[in-house]
Length: 209
Image 1 (cartoon, rainbow, N blue to C red):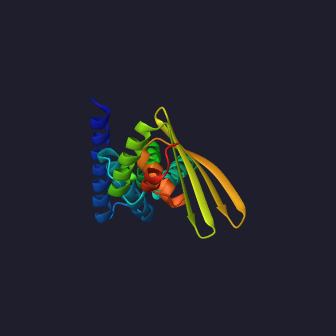
Image 2: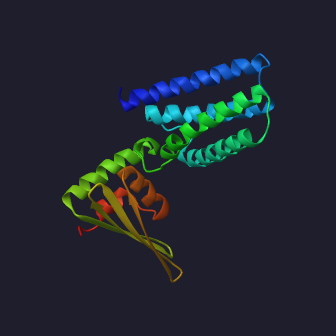
Image 3: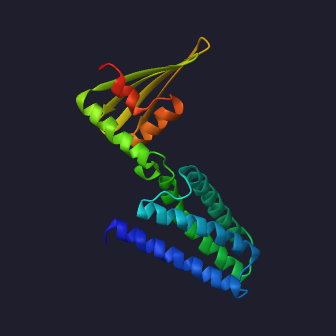
């Protein structure tokens, strides 16, 4: 069995668990805490399907915090189960929720990584292809842009499977320098536009390094 098929079966299993949980709640077999678990589980499963189908769902910023919440919640529930006497229904819900959460934590953490093509817009993907073409002809790209009293200069280098961007920003006589590494060029495009105000066309217009 391939890893992708195993992920799909896992997502189907989790979806069925949510369906069973919803039926149990409608039948009056759950607790108020179970409703919270069900809602969080629904969001988590949406992220799981997004990860499997390689589709962006709700933006990357929410998934790693959610993975952290699930991890803390799972550990807390396991602690309660070991230290407090509970009724059978509550134990069943909490144990199921803890196991459910722990398996999702790693997947959602990976899904929340912004450095993936699934989070890029069509425009960023197109610009990434242009950037790759430029880097095939040059080992290093440099560009500079000035707007009023603000100036930004960037140097981009591809090293193996990584893209390294060195940025220098100047404003009001102050200078700031930082460097970031990326695995996907579309993420680099997003970074340059947001933090340096530069596009791929600025490299194209610049003199070759």
